[in-house]
Image (cartoon, one colour):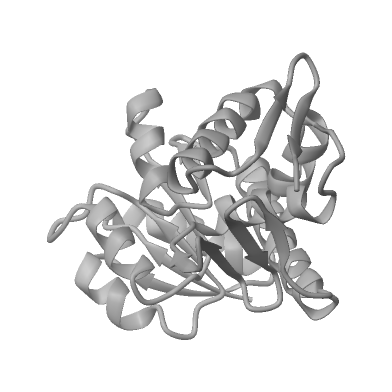
Length: 221
C-alpha cells in the first residue's frame, strides 16, 4: 500500500515514516500542500496534517476532492467538535487529534482501507440502482442522483447511504452502521454517524431516510 504523508514537522514525519514502513507500507512524504497535490496521484491513502506552511490543510483536502476520491485521514492538533466537523465536511474519511498512539493510527488506517475494499466489492456485485423517493443510488457507478441530477457525496456519505440502500426497508442499528462504515461501534463514533446522516439529508432533500428511535435508521422506498 502506498501512503502519502503530508506533514511539515520533520521529526513527526520521520517517526511516522518509520512506523508505517515497519508495518509494510510504502511512504512518500510532502512537507507542503502544493507538493502533496502533485504527489498524490498514485497514492492509496493520504495522512494529512492541517498546519502546513504554504496553505491550510483543509484547502489541500478541498482541492484534492475535486479530482480524487483517495481516502484521507486528517492528523492534526486541532481539536473540538467544530474542527472535526470542518474536516469531515471537507471530505476526510477520518479525523485524528494528535498525539495519536501508534496502535490506534494503524487500526484506523486498516479500518479505512477495509471500507474502501468493501465498497469496491459491493460495486462489483451490484444489481442496479436502488430508488428511494426522488433519490437513486447506483453502487456500480458510485453515483447518487436527486430527481435525475447527479449529487456530490463524500466517500463516507456514500458508504453510509449505500449500506442503508442495500437493506432498503429494513431498520439498521446504529452499531451495525458504525461497524460497516468505520469498523468500530465505539460510543465516540455515534456523533460522527449523526453528523453524516444530517449531511445526507441536507444534500438529498426528500430522501425517505427515517430515524428509528432508540435503534438506528431505515431507508424507505
